[in-house]
Amino acid sequence: MNNTNVIKNYGNKMDKIITVEAKPNIAFVKYWGKRDLKLNLPKNSSISMTLSNATLDGEPFKTVTSLVFSDKLNEDEFYLNGKKIDTSNKDEAKGFWIIDYIRNIAGDKRHVMLVSNNSFPTSNGLASSASGLAAMAYATVKALDLDISDKELSTIARMGSGSASRSIYGGIVLWHKGEKEDGSDSYSEPIKISPYWNDLVDLICITNSTKKKVSSTAGMQTTVQTSEFYKMRPDYAEKNIKEIMKALEENNFNSFADIIMKDSNNMHATMIDSKPPIIYINDISRDIINSIEELNKREGKNIAAYTLDAGPNPHIIVKKENIKKVEDAIKDIEGIEKILKVQISETGCRLLGDEESLIKEDGLKLIPK
Ligand code: DP6
Image (tube, rainbow, N blue to C red; front, side, top):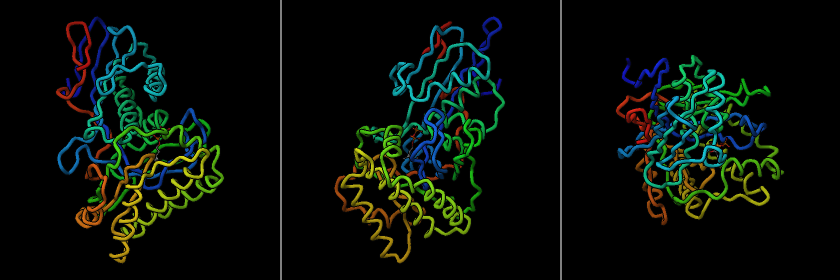
């Protein structure tokens, strides 16, 4: 028996408790808009970096998920951050249907218990669907012993939440938009990068820790349906992908940062052009954007890049040696609750040992810890 699985034999059935870790990612060229709502097929390709499982200050920054398929369960059970989730509630149990999808492939009829905790520093309003759905897909595939490639796994995670397809891997990851209707060519893969990029850090500036008002899923739909300006976005994003790949290849931080900032601003412009306008940026995020623009101007080149997802918390992408300069540049901005410093992660989803399991067996019962 290997140390990652608890295997118990009841009659001829095996219950295997699998525990995995996944991390969020931050997109450099963003995904905003779907060509297929059910399969989460994007209008454009996107590129991101996977974040480390702990901040530079040592706080955990990851999703841990345990999962078991068992005849001892009378129904599917899902516990998220200590709360029991109604698995038929599509918002709360976002993407849970991918378990059924995988269960069908495996021809397994047993119910599942899934326990997932996001160990991000307290209530910071960070999106967790990327790491949560990547962990769910990965753990399910492992628990059912399916022999599928990471590429296929990334397409399954994508069906749960688009950005989750990128969290399967560590490092810098490209999600190909694909062309096919069945989504089989809309997968992610890691990009080979030189050690020059190994010291990338994301300084996540928490400016508002409450839950976002418009979810990404709903927001991008409104933008696609109502924004005239959005029509130019897919082609523009594809151009940004080509340029950022070139910047990565040439170890050109200046150009890399330029594309990140332009792409984020472009995405937010399409959001504001929506009806009703979707405005995620707040006054503090705007002050941070301005400070980074000024810092780069003083330096005579880009040493830092801001980027914002569907929320008001700017991520500042910087090489480790320049963290101090960024901190000095934003230190007088009022309202920054906290700055989380998170490095690029070498690893994507990975199995954890039994000692990290969130499910315990008590006699013939399975109990969330
Ligand atoms: C702005 O992946 O959360 O963070 O596919 O509907 O689950 P769904 O959307 P989601 O959207 C992420 C949007 C973004 C940009 C990005 O991460 O690329």
